Length: 188
Image (tube, rainbow, N blue to C red; front, side, top):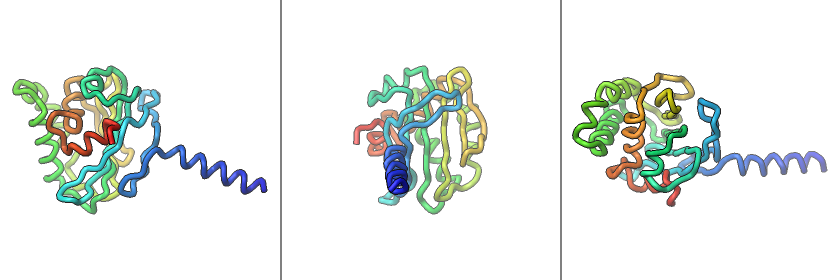
């Protein structure tokens, strides 16, 4: 009887520990940022291209919000996590998508000021991405945005302007996917 009770409690814990499942990816309800701050799952969505699932995108914030301007102005830590589900995305295609996201969502003056840091960001995608690869983009106030692949730190890019330019790839006026944006904003 005791084993059944313990097993039941464990199953209940597992059900609450994972907030969502999308395209075979289980997303946690909360995580710890690199600075130790607890971040809450704001929302999760699916990036599709021609009806093919490419990756699951999750947005974690210190306080949930569906308001893009509010999210961009928050000074706390945040994370965007991308869990790839498609068999392989070439480096070339991924960088092209990032480039489009940066260019479409910035003012005419912004890209020039950011270009060195954007180029640094592109270098972190020099190899193809395969299913089960996970990228995390963590903004840590006073430090910058860290880029991690499969829990290996690739580098850090400084600046609030870069942080916002990166967020706008998914949350800007011209997001990678409108459905993904709605999901990350918790509107689905």
